[in-house]
Amino acid sequence: MKKTLFLLICSFNLAYASTLPVFNQKLLSSYDGQNGHQSYVALNGYVYDVSSIDEWDGGRHYKGMKAGTDLTPFISQSPHKAKIIQQLNLKPIGTYKN
Picture 1 (tube, rainbow, N blue to C red):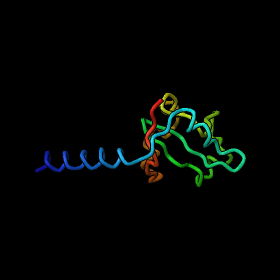
Picture 2: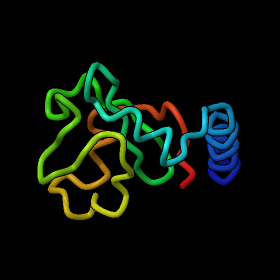
Picture 3: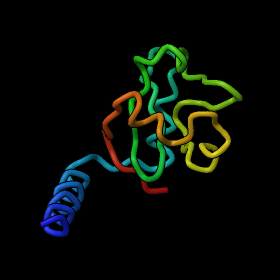
Picture 4: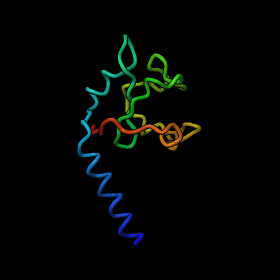
């Protein structure tokens, strides 16, 4: 039963991810939070909209992190790690392929 449920959830996640738009580095960089643009960040292959999060105001975050970039290489240095995605209940708005 547990294995079946796990496989069902994984299948759903794969199907959901395949319907999301794909961002590359150039497209993601246009969502830098500057000049009225939305603030998007990539993390572990997914893109998230952080525009409504006060700590991302203006597309800038602590320690030089910027919207419009892939944060995967830097997330291990943050105090909250990747779990912040779940804590803020952020849902992916796209997938990221560099």
